[in-house]
Length: 95
Image 1 (cartoon, rainbow, N blue to C red):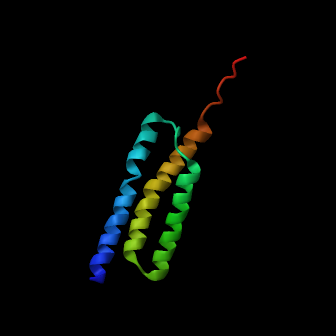
Image 2: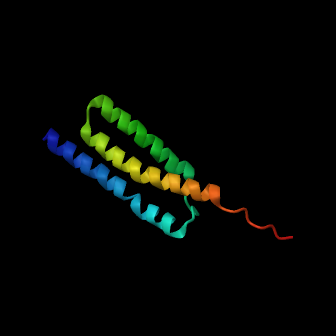
């Protein structure tokens, strides 16, 4: 039973990773980070790194794999959003 729950947990974490994909695609298509909170997604990424470290210390492959997949998608979104935020041109002042 323990192995089944661990397997389901890993699948759930993989599903979690896939939830970031639509947002990542939207940011890439728009070439804009509008509406994206870098603090939120950066925080998610930090928590995923902590989850990976916990998985390593607990010898939990499901946690390591699932959190790594989430970090890959969420981290990509965070990096892409950060890139678009930093590269956007200052808006012209009207006056």
